[in-house]
Length: 449
Length: 159
Ligand SMILES: Cc1cc2nc3c(=O)[nH]c(=O)nc-3n(C[C@H](O)[C@H](O)[C@H](O)COP(=O)(O)O)c2cc1C
Ligand code: SF4
Ligand code: FES
Image (cartoon, rainbow over all chains, first blue to last red; front, side, top):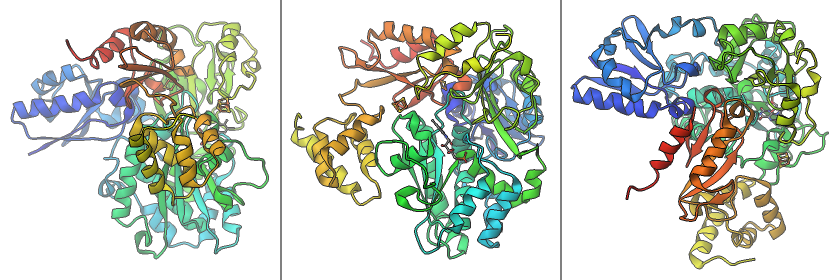
């Protein structure tokens, strides 16, 4: 019987040698005449365990990590193909405490499936949301998004359903667009990248549902140039979805059209702002447009346009599949659903944590993050990218939701940066270099720094 | 403005003509030119402007707005070292100093033998594996000076 081994193709895992590990496993299997098929999945997001290798056994998927090419012969020796025990054994992947406690909705398939396989996607619940949407009136789809409480995950936290309704309400019979903001420019954020590489069809399905909901027949994904791996995954997945007739002139046999294209940015941070993104998509300098009119009324090429972040759009299939109320049951206050939070920088266990809104910074930094990588006390946390806030330890028990952090969670990125350095150093560090040249907001922090 | 050698001019002409019909094609055209030639030569600007029916000023304005487009021929290998906050918190500054010394060049420069160009980059989405480096589109994480040297050595032909 052929053993199935998973080795991630996620760019982060590759950056730590996953490609070499996959080659070494194939070579060692050939040498031993063992029947092994190496499958490539996305990353589970536990980057301190990458490259994380999994083997499918009768007990489910068992994990080993972090694996280097030099460990491979030893793993075969320990009979890892049958779940043999080894110094790198982590047990069943789903039981790894860091992963087990998470509430993965948007990221439920990331790290689990083969990213660009429509068959694998459908086996794991993919395209059920679209099927549901196709049985609904457009207004009912938009209403479901409103009821779910989904707010934009790209920074401004604007209610997604309201944005969609504005586009839906523009007269039919004209060209409308769905655009995805995949510029992910803030340091410390990588959830968009992980999703696009690990489960691109979820984004594609979310955009397709958006198109059906508002009557848009063309979508664009505006992807930053720094993400070549995501570009390959998206283009391959779009071609596969076309092939399977989930995109094109007759989406899933509905007679409705939706086409999708990736456009690549060119290294301008400001193009993450939605109106400059639209300028850039039109092939111009990415200069911010004056508002009004809103993009929902006059957006791309002057037409009604949805602009949403990757994670916002990728949350849509789950909502349609499981129902708006099921999604709204997660979270607290006006922050409903889950947030993929990224722990990065000087932290022991960096990676992606998807949890319902409402957990505290302390849980994130210590229970998940394990404290600073250097072992020194955490003195401040930068929340939400370079334009976000610095939070001192006195506020670490604050629950993560939009209101408590006053919109500063932005994209959900947490960079544990300022361990043991003074506020002055902090200001000097950042003062010269914010990408937008705006004055620093580090001073907001105050407190025990 | 310098004029392009005929071979390059033909490439630019063909790319621009091929993509002309697409909505808002200019950025796509510039990407394709850089993919084919390694950079966007200043001499490409009038050619692109003419094919796409834009003013030279407009094309020039777009080429210069976006940091990603290069104006001169890069070295055989482009080494980009992340300068953004998460990588800074994990030693990107020291790694950058090391890279400068090892390659003997500063940012935006190309080594005399034409082998390496060194560029700053602002977040590769690999902030959980900082500090991060990209070489010719391949990503590397948790890069120590020793690993950096090994990555560079891999790209120098053995004598
Ligand atoms: C300087 C600046 C940079 C931004 N960068 C991004 C980005 O990289 N990704 C993103 O989704 N939104 C970014 N935004 C927010 C967008 O303008 C916009 O609010 C968002 O794409 C809307 O999608 P959402 O409602 O799904 O969040 C940025 C905003 C500003 C002002
Ligand atoms: S500072 Fe200027 S060049 Fe840099 S991203 Fe902002 S607008 Fe563009
Ligand atoms: S800050 Fe360097 S990869 Fe994100």
